[in-house]
Length: 136
Image 1 (cartoon, rainbow, N blue to C red):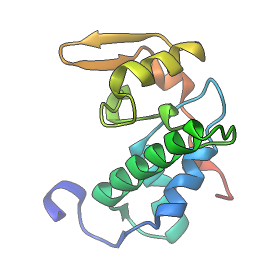
Image 2: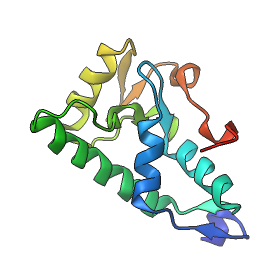
Image 3: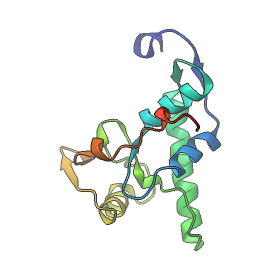
């Protein structure tokens, strides 16, 4: 990991921490996994937050939210607002690209296909930078 992420300290986040940050993203806004990782690294005073476990926990939060939605619950984690690096839609989230695209477009985002990937146009303008907040 040193070659890709550098030297220093690494935090392995708890699943609840990833879910909590995903829940903080308001309607019409977006976040990337890297933004979540940056916020968690800052929170724990480390250089890096593990990309593998953060991604896995985001996937778990997304699937748990979809199960809750299917049971009729309204207050679920808005997983569709969490993108991969570069504004790419995560095809592994519930319902695949089509479901996430639908939910994002309902919130005013434009999604386009680039090759095999789907990207939110100008996603940077809608990013929430949680790591800049003083309290997480």
